[in-house]
Length: 232
Image (cartoon, rainbow, N blue to C red; front, side, top):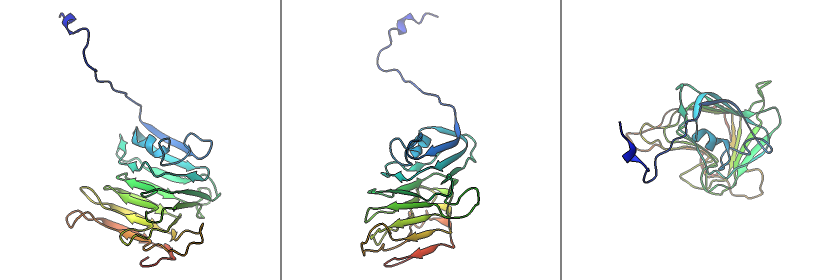
């Protein structure tokens, strides 16, 4: 077979990078491999850019400064059952905060994400505090057909004054809805790092995409809802 006429190649040939699936432990904090969750060098982008082949354990190891740029999107998972755990490395309180012109922490289509603020050794306490300093944006949101996600034993603060939003938002899906979300045993409240008298309009806000694409199985259990202007 004579293929000499095919050379030299013209144009720009396609190229591909094949990565091994990732899994295991990822340390996040000052001085660690990932300085935060949501920036260009954060662990969310790393997960979005790779294929997952097992459970992911994101250990928070210090206070984090976030810009909210990257959501945790639907994960390419070779197993179909991998979970993403986000938790503190010990019983030291950590603050995850920033000024983001959108939700600071966005779970956008990612399934089986478990954010747990307890000390793993004692399974007690509440050692993760999330705070968006923007006056009209959420701190945490679940969107994009996210399913089977859990937020428990954390504190969520914000001063979102929008009447059609909240400090924590169960947002719209794309084709199926945001389903099977558990919001359990958290403290959700106004910011405590400022003396402003402006309170958030709503602490928890939910919205579906349409009458055909609704959110289902949203469980809100045992939370402390403090200091809001309109609705808890």
